[in-house]
Amino acid sequence: MNKPSQHTHSIHFDGVGLRYGRGEEILKDINMSLLAGSLNFITGPSGAGKTSLLKLVYLHMRPSRGLITIFGQDTSQLAARAIPKTKRRMGVVLQDFQLVDHLSVFENVALPLRIRGLKRQTYGEDVISLLQWVGLGKRLYAFPPTLSGGEKQRVAIARAVIGKPDILIADEPTGNVDDAIGKRLMRLFFELNRLGTTVLIATHNHDLIPKNADIYKLDNGTFALETDGHG
Amino acid sequence: MVMGKAYNTAKQSPLLFEDKSDGRPLFMILVILAFLASLTLLATKTSYFAAAHWSAQLSDTATVQIKPGEGGLSQQTAAQARGILLQSETVTDVDILSQEQSKALLRPWLGDTSLPDDLPLPLLLSVRLKKGQSLDQQKITAQFRQAGIRADIDDHGRWAKSLTRSARMAQTISLLSLVLIIITLVAAAIFATRSGIAARRKFMSILHQIGANPNYTARLFSQNFALKSFKAGAIGALGAYLVLSLLAVLARDDGGASLFLPSLKTGLTDLYWVASVPVGMAIIAALTAWRTVMKTLIAEIYP
Ligand SMILES: Nc1ncnc2c1ncn2[C@@H]1O[C@H](COP(=O)(O)OP(=O)(O)OP(=O)(O)O)[C@@H](O)[C@H]1O
Ligand SMILES: [Mg+2]
Image (cartoon, rainbow over all chains, first blue to last red; front, side, top):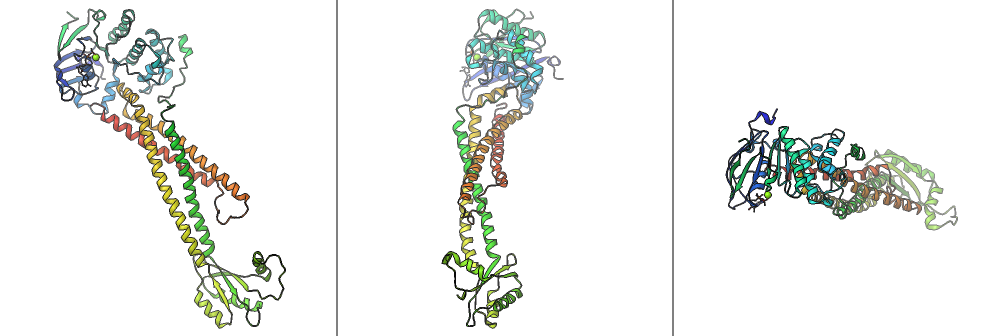
């Protein structure tokens, strides 16, 4: 019922500001409207607030001011029990991956499906093909502490996309891999986007941004559309 | 899909890992406390049942000792005394111990020397009383005096009183120990659960981040820690049960002393009693885990 296509905007920020504690505002008056099914990139110098902005989107914290609407719902009005439900519709890849060290690569990727109560038989093959696609077909049994940075990143990406989320959020998803793998991983996001997922990626690497994407630039706490992928 | 066959897709591995190192000392503490709690529980139970057993035996009987008078003792005097006793409302039955039985009672003191038949032995009457009733000593003494019978009446009251007093003391001490151990055990179970959750804090956050319901996570932790506490409790309780059973076997080999160890012999009932220890621990751990996880998750659900 809440399919993203029914809302014009998947993610909507209206006059959003964020400060940590009593510090200065690191995000000032952010206004953005991401269309359902759009492909969006955020760039900006280190410390500009990209990660912080993404955290606001995936409901990790509340803004200091302003209004955030996700799937057409004002997030400040969300009931506690609606929050996990909203989160399950998002796939998130973080800069520090957030993998579960005591679970194998396979189990890490299967986790979003498992918490939905799905049975192993129904998703086992999907998880394995996805891991083969990201080049980890031989590391199914490995545990995250034994993986390289790039391998961890690929596990995190696989976990974010396995549930075919309505919104995909990725923070520097290709920061630890070479360009060849980076391009391959990006294709995963584009494929998901083609199926209707709203994609929001923060990255430094302009080479990976396709021409049809909207690029937003975050600098000094303010936010501007730099390139409109639709002309 | 070759890999698909290679990876066991049928079996779900547990989401919560069994900690190899960090939880060990706490687990041992839980086992030892469960052991102590089970021992104390059985000791307390024994002290209550034994006291009830003794006082019931002592208070429902009395002994009347008829002293040899000038004319010696005759069965007639004994029968007369028995008649008087039976008239009393609280008496259910009176046995006249034969000379042989009386002699048998003296044997431990006099040895196996054959006693001369004309040795003036007191005649003993064993009186059984109605449950919880006592002998009206004054009335019976007066009736005996009227009939010219010289007798001592012992209703074991003094015995029972001092026995009750020491039993009470044993009960109080074991009950106090039991309460203290249970408090320690509860505190340790709560602490072990909380520290176990703290060690899995990151995992909890990841589950929350990918959208697990707080209920789901709480149930996961709850079940895990309930099981762990149950295991510790079961090992401790079973250990205590086995130790007591062994002690009981050794005590039985001694032959005597059975009066003071009336229920040291362990039975199936005792197993039920000690089973309450692991079950209680599991419940405490489950509740603690549930509360701790829910509190943490609700606090950070959308900060
Ligand atoms: N938890 C926090 N508490 C206080 N200040 C923070 C916190 N997280 C981030 N900041 C500050 O907010 C600013 C923006 O940080 P953020 O991580 O969003 O930047 P970024 O654009 O993602 O940088 P990078 O490209 O290096 O990842 C920085 O100045 C940072 O020091
Ligand atoms: Mg960042």
